[in-house]
Image (tube, rainbow, N blue to C red; front, side, top):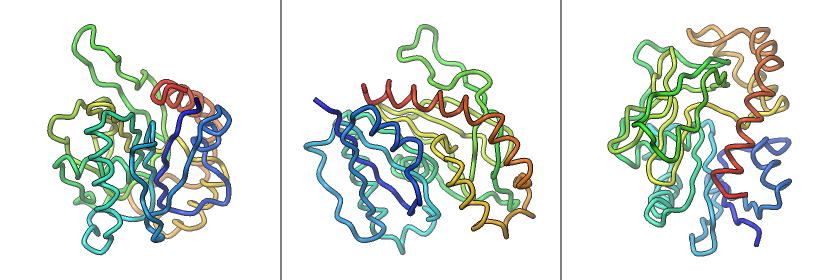
Length: 234
């Protein structure tokens, strides 16, 4: 039976991101819901996995985003059920907040926009499953906020920059501060819409982003496709 993956999206894309394209190519039943547009969230009774994506919204604006509370309640339900869940950027920040972590902008005004290397953190000997973050993985970030260590979570990766916490795991949930799903058309949209932030510390130039995308994206996408296969049992 095809795996039923619920995807919580928080922005519109002109083309599917790399994760959605891969899930469909692998035969998964990928259902996309936009709660931020007022679409109702389904129950988890007929869901085999949950993918919670990034977006321009901020967890610090939670009081004015009631749908975000609804999504976090659904995420807590997925944790309780032991459903495999993958949370990216805003999704990771929402999960961290739901677990009791602090989510906030960098006090110095730094952001993370561009490619950078993440470093896997050591795990207890013979731990299963192993840390899914490999040595030398270079990732794309587009972060204006970060999170503190969620209570009870296993931290998986760190990096230089405003936010040391780059990935964590709790139960069957995996969360990344970075964006493995971004395709070239999506990056084009980011560059057009976020140009006003290029002067801020932590933002790479467009030329550097373009060169790094060519250099690092193939390996990042190969890692992401493998992660989706393993995490959701495709």
